[in-house]
Amino acid sequence: MTLPSTETLLHRLGWDDGFDAAFADHRAAGLVPARVAIQHRGAYDLIAEQGELRASAATRLFKADELPAVGDWVGVDPETGLVEAVLPRRTSISRKEVWQAVREQVLAANVDVAFLVQALPLDFNVRRLERYLAMAWESGAQPVVLLTKSDLVDDVGPFLADVDAVTLGSCPAHAVSARTGEALDQLPPYLEPNRTAVLLGSSGVGKSTIVNALVGEELLATQEVREDDQRGRHTTTHRELILLPAGGVILDTPGIRELQLWDADLEQTFGDVEEIARRCRFSDCNHDREPGCAIRQALADGTLPEERWESYVKLQREVEALEARRNHLLRQERVREYKIRERQNRKKPRKR
Image (cartoon, rainbow, N blue to C red):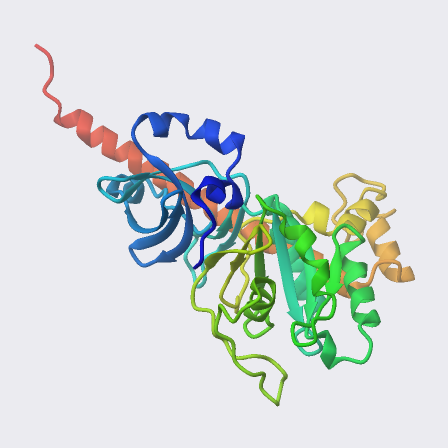
């Protein structure tokens, strides 16, 4: 990676007065600020004023389950090469870990813009887009929909109309082509110096190709699209923070095969559904058999599409089920901690 002068490097990475104030105590303790660019197993590639460096996390961060993620600002001990502190995150894009584990996986930290990427025509899926929107709105970042490979369709209008139907005009959408360069000039305004964006989407939708186009060189490996489904082959294997020549930082991510929500802003994502529900006669309406149900009326007259309602209900149930499991595990942990304290108290000698 070619780095700019150290005088402006931290600010190019997103450092500002707020982070500087939050770092005051760590600086007094002899730590230096750096940002996590790549996360490896047991190690991190960081960018600091001195340039790139490799570091490991201090043991206490492991014990406290406070390990940094890509995009985090951290405090590094220059003598030991250990990450000793992680600054509070302004935004955090997270998903539930795959399989059965009820654990949060932070995909990107301190991100200003979340590019939600789908490739035209075969990867386009509005139901999946709703899921990504729910995650992005919850994170605190500004979602922006990118429809890539626009050169593979004759008319992008219907696809953009479908996007607008689910975003309700709440976030921008662009149809772009890295191969022809179409509409790529619409992306730099999101990537001004001191701002960070992340690319999120399935494998092969062209995320790395977009990064290469913005950087102006073949920085990330890409592969040709397959003839059967017009999708690229999976090439990105880790999340990586990349400085752009014109300013700003972009975070490339591996393709997401399954996006299980950790938390979601359904009120923002499904503002139209929430508004209809507020017109129900009863505030605790289950939208089943209650009289005066505005949801059932909207489904009957077609003002609320059945597919959108079903998507809302599915995501709502998913979030509620996860919250119940998280609360159950929290109660178990509190019981475990209580038992440990009681055992320790019993071992203490009684005062005579």
